[in-house]
Image 1: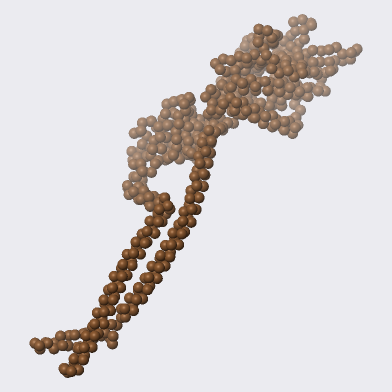
Image 2 (image 1 turned 180 degrees about the vertical axis):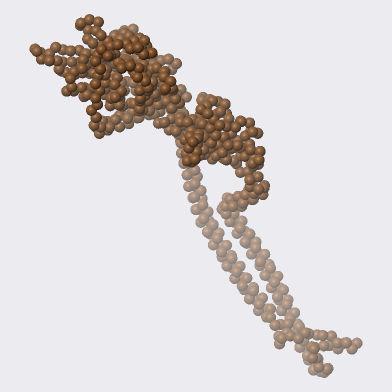
Length: 596
């Protein structure tokens, strides 16, 4: 896994010109879903945003997802030194780096971007121009966030202010009224004085006063009494009438205002009751939301990697068992539906002569194959009672399944042995269909896909296959050598024995991957044909033959899972597998020549 990144030093991670953290990009393993598990993705950290692409070459097609880091929570995993989680609200990304050093580098870079993403940081203020933007924002927030009903007192305060303003206005009106009254009295006195002067002039006539009215003083000078005016003189405006009108108008306004205040106070009581009801509803909704969030956290991302199998899994053993059983039930229903709809195409799977399968071979695994064959032959005749501690776990007609409980380092490695008797088929036919990859998918329903990695000889191949995932268990893959052999009888009374052995090997063309857990197997299908003589001179038919089967399985699951779950699944699936496979062989061989 290659990564393109800068140094983890905080000084070097910041662009000296812009003050922004530098871009970081590289390959991280991202948890996709419970079907595909961990997948390599090209992850980019830029502009306070974490984005991922399917690969570096596909960046031009746009990202497949992104997270804003302003409110992100970065959590290093407690047990996995390469893993860390990035969560924003309900969205969680599970990521794995190549090694702990790269994980630390990514975490530090993400934290740096997160620190610079908040409004009010040094670089953020530079981007927004000055501290004024922050102050203005705070002021605007303060002014707009204050509700008119804050604590139920805001409206009452405004009403009290209106009462105060009304009192002030009343005092001002009184003052103005006094002023207008004084003006009216002064005008009245002026008119009275002017009338008296006019009467005196009639008694003591003087020269005409074209420029106005003058009074002659003792020193011979004259004094202007009044300037020219309208017939009403200074009393051109009816001040007293205007004052009365103004007083009546203001009284009406004040009366209306008082009435409005009363209405508003009544409405305030009504709205306060509504507000109290809404606040109560909001409290209940918030409590329900909090409870839902707490419940969601308990079951958060139930398909995430923390709920996979493992000693630190967040799912308990009972829930693990229920989930596996439910998944297997779904697979059974799907398989039943497929079988009812599927019309098998006839396949030409001609078996080679017995001589071709009796040789050991000269390939590089020939000695290992011969050793495995001999071990299985010896193991198959071992008694299933006494000191061997075999337990009979399933008995259905001719089929019996035995188990011996074995654990190493907490991993269940129980050997299984099954015996069965199938009428109408030979050991050669059973082993042929078990070994032939051309018909593998016709009867094997647990395989997702497989391919032949290498053909060693006519009777030995190396096969890689992945099995369908049963959540919450991790997906398994297997790389094994499969060989078919005919074991010649040691005497005339002993029947021919056919054997298929599958055992795990390593191969450069199929290395282990992060996607699957590599399981180890050592399995053998050992078959003998028993013939009952036909009556008289009749030829042997399928009614006269029966195949005795010994099936031996030693499986290392390659990872941890609850022992009770593994044993329950083995007890459930092995009998189904044997019945499904033997029924398939009977169906394929019906009406065809017997292959001994």
